[in-house]
Length: 95
View 1 (tube, one colour):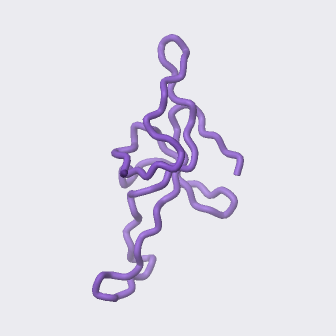
View 2 (tube, rainbow, N blue to C red):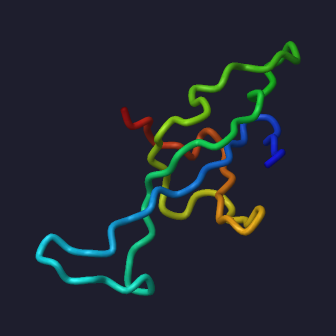
View 3 (cartoon, rainbow, N blue to C red):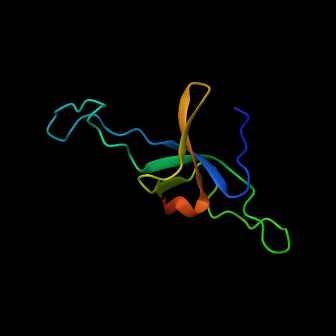
């Protein structure tokens, strides 16, 4: 895939959630809550400062992050579901 976000945008892919409870019950995908954890696929160069230089991004490719429930815009690339969001919509980096 050849996709490069601009400025402080980040392309992410949701981490798959478990479809089975700890007691062994299966949850249908329509009843599952979408996970708020994702893997960073690609990052932009960063926001420009007053001098016109790019500020470095806090996240990098392959980071696992937490993001807000209603953050970003969902899109489909090559049959896969992704989300593009601003760096400021990222709540934390999971290590």
